[in-house]
Amino acid sequence: MSIAVYIAVMAVTTYLIRAIPFAAVRGKIKSRFLNSVLYYIPYAVLSAMTFPAIFFSTGNVVTSAVGTVIALVAAFFNLPMIVVAISGSLGAFVCALIMGLV
Image 1 (spheres, rainbow, N blue to C red):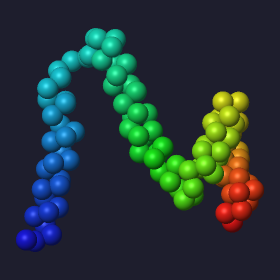
Image 2: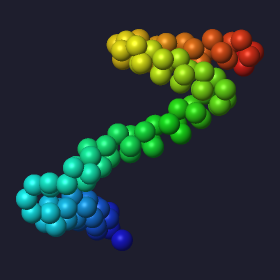
Image 3: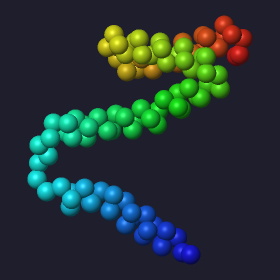
Image 4: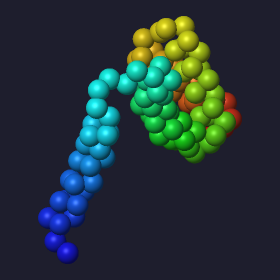
């Protein structure tokens, strides 16, 4: 088959996924529960994609967990994002040094 057919099928599929909710729901959603669910969906999807990658990124679950905990603590204290990222990375690296993995 031609690559143009593949692209056309993906374009239609992507369009339908985005257009069907607009066609199905006419007007403002008044349910507080449904609004709450729709509000948190992007965060849930991002977490579902990110957390497995975090724990397998270093090749060792222990060093990944240490880096994650350090990053979560730094984020809890509202530190800037660059500080959170660097502290988590350094924590995982130092843990790997201590364990003799590097």
